[in-house]
Length: 183
Image (cartoon, helix red, strand yellow):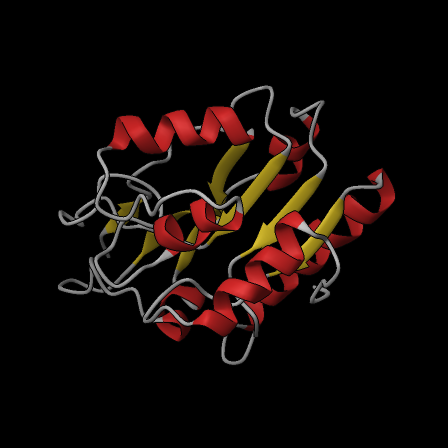
């Protein structure tokens, strides 16, 4: 079975990261994305800047997204490093499929421990329905964050659509810190 690596596996959060946003997986063969959460139907780069009353970066070049990340001290990482999949399924990103084909997990605990300024970790998924292996990984990460005094919450997924309610949940969770969907 072919092994599919994460497209951005060599991009690590910068040392000054205070906010770490965790996702799942972007296959190396995916051509329509230049960075984490860059798929056309993903609205993270619209939601995130608006949290601080900024302009959407959804259509912005990577350099503008990176500038925003540095300014807001935001880093990204994904739980999965590589998948082992049946021939012809190299770009399948269905949650249940990915969850059952993980060949290697990223060492998120080590990433967290390498970030001395880290204050918050946000996982871009509200539910673990149909993805039991990801749920186990996140439980371990949540326990580690709790032990270290790092805030960890789930966010409503930035995928599929944008809504005023979703935007408000992101503002309330990330900026105001008045809500937190527990992992």
